Image 1 (tube, rainbow, N blue to C red):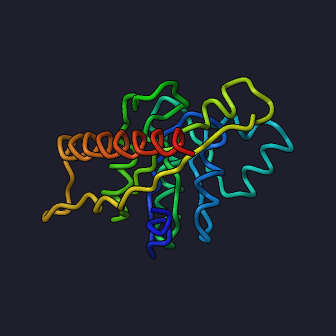
Image 2: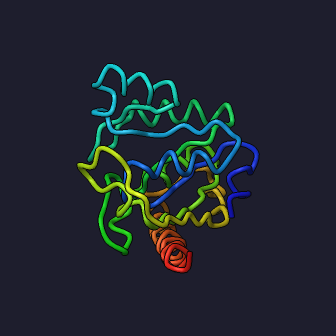
Length: 187
């Protein structure tokens, strides 16, 4: 399903998050420049901070709605950019999608960008938290079809509508993640 990432116009790329390998794996599936919302601590190291900035990462505060990061993402969407937003927030473990936050729904409502759920399996084993280098293992990336942008006739999106969209995203993420896990086991 990588062809979905080449959908023209603004995109919200919404992968599961199990490893620091996830964003680079997704970004290499398309010829488009892909930006990402990243935790602010990624930018503290001089060299690594420069690298993630050069690759288009946007610093954000973890665990809270960061208005500055969301405004920066909204500006990028206005220029037609593709942005990775990890709906689970931080890296998770296991085969089930964790709680999904409504940042992707919020951005979709504000920008009219479709959301593309992505399941990634095998990266947790390839580079678990604390690992300095990846290990060789089977990895699979499943790109689901885009979810239509969150829109209403009035132009206003309620909290209830955002939550419903987020719930639908969680289901689509789990479906793509399950498929990716099956693919990774078959290789």
